[in-house]
Image (tube, rainbow, N blue to C red; front, top):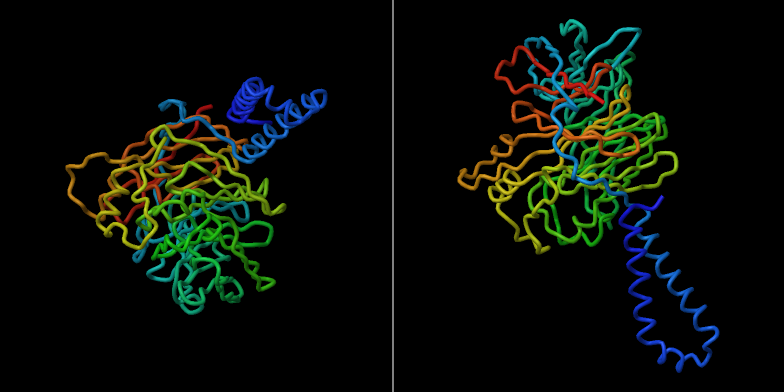
Length: 418
């Protein structure tokens, strides 16, 4: 079904072309010398031209940002506390909820100590730990569960590893970027990896933006697909075209966020500077785009327009990122069949001193949309949460509270009211 914008353009094009034809009818008759066939030719031209406009709009859907902040659509309905072990701390690495043998757990990686901590979901007590330092000595870790762990290492080539502690087996896949693409490194942090149809998917980014090397969105590939069983890998996706047309400045805008919907075999890719979400179909290997705007980030002023390397200093770039809004992590709730997207609300206080940590003072909102990518609402949640650390369970969305107590990780439970 064509969207409203496409219909509007269609009607407008017909009106404009019709006016032009009427004003130049005599000239056209003289040129064609065939008045009877002229009307048919012109009608066909109008139809074909309008059809091209509609086809151009076909693959992009837009959801309005006009939905107001709805305090009632989501509320804090509880807490979950995880009791840290001696070497654990709340922001040690990626975190995930999983179920196994009829029980529920939360697993968190510790990149610094090279361990995997397992917590009982009900009690929050630590019930297990896996040491992966021997076979996964470096890089970022992600635990799908206590028996399935992957890691990524920034190198040339990059190394993506799979490790099964139960039988102490591991597999390593070296990844090399093709020459005509800007080199990107696969990452496990912040949102972890996605396992779907026997393959793994990792977000990709790197320090060193190289804006002058990017002519189109597909020059820079944001997702890596890895098949450990076949020892194969492939970069997929592409950035929105605004990334190719502008100089985005700091690393912050380049970090893509991914989430997976295993029921529909879809991977969503979000970008900090854009409301656009790319929807990649794993089975069909096609990409669709949908624009879902936040009421707090209807437009995001970009750092620069020049494509050269002479962009802002790091301090200026981070300051810009802190002052303006951005789109953050995505996650899918398979129990509620809903998507959540975090939005960082710009500080908009130019009296503040420049500080790289200023960006962590941003307030946040959570956008909610369904599997048809219809925006259902948005709620501001303030600045007391560390939104990088979150997970979804049958109860709802858990987000880590900002707390100086490193012995207990406190997560607030957000539930949706629809």
